[in-house]
Image (cartoon, rainbow, N blue to C red; front, side, top):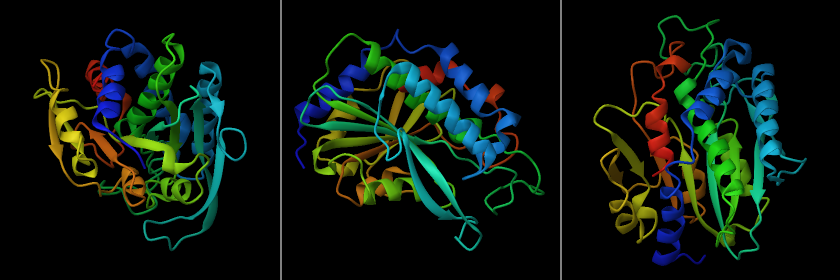
Length: 291
């Protein structure tokens, strides 16, 4: 795998230049839709998650991303329900779109779109979770909205970038990173040509401190220098070296792909039915996407 300081600085500086391009209203529209009761918490493989899948695919098509799954945008995979994989078997889908700039290397931008459904799988932190819709606005409709809007920016910015871009919305994260593990074992592009992976998981609650946590800095010798340049008056970047963690970037790190996880912090609504769209800091998420 080839990745250089210049490549990393160039790619991240492209994102940082889009400050006026990402719109809070579009982010709000996506999160309000994906975190509505109609989607019943987007439990892996559920009817609600299938509705979320259809919504995301509609966005990818409107943006004119190239399908890069195994069946159009979809990459189906098998899973077992329950946090320890002891439940029933089912099928879910990653959703994968691509921008082909004719470049040698590709940047992957991803987020999981599944959540806890009706709180029956044992991951909820609510005292009496079963039967309650866990809408997962921050976890992780926020990251999913980020993927959609970054895809829109890179497709519509009128530039031919020096990297290709692969946008992935993973399923099965809450049950144990099923979707990202499956993708890295069954990639639809050549992983040796991947420059790095950016994972956005819970980026919708930027606090008053303006702290953005970025983990995975130790996965490339260039990250520290690059990330030091991202702090500004609207965002204070706090870094951690580990490439491992309970989210989808870990699946790429174990394949020796530099990976970062963007995260605005935990809160009292984490893994509870109260993680709703009206608690999202939409302007704050725009700042994160500008990072």
